[in-house]
Each structure stands twice: as C-alpha cells, then as structure tokens.
Length: 83
Image (cartoon, rainbow, N blue to C red; front, top):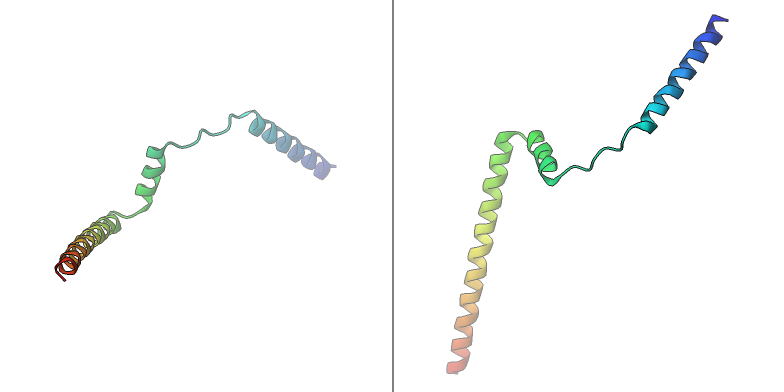
C-alpha cells in the first residue's frame, strides 16, 4: 500500500511540475550582445588573442596580394598598349 501511495505522490508531483512548466513564459530570444558575451566567456583569453592576431594577419595578406594583383594588371595593360 505504501508503494502505491508513493507512486501516486510521484505522479502528482510530475503533473504539478508539467503544469508549472506550461504556465511559464517562453524564454526571450538572446540579443546579439548576449550571444557574443556567451561565446567570449567560453573562449580562453589567450586563444582569443591568438585568433585576433591570426585573422588580422590574414586580412593584411589578402589586402597586399589584391593590391599586387591590381598593379600587375595595370602594368600588363600598359605593356599591351605599347605593343
């Protein structure tokens, strides 16, 4: 009999918990700031510094290579006009 009563109590608490869950408001969607803050908190500081340096170097390399490409195209045009 005690086991049956315990089962009934467990069932009641489950029903009450599900009612409470239904009555709660859905969580608000996170703002961009909150999302970035979560990511920032997950990544160690040293790794963050390394990633910033890596991406800034990558941007610098791409900028220089694009500039060299434009200069090369300009010279090829000039040479082709001379011929």
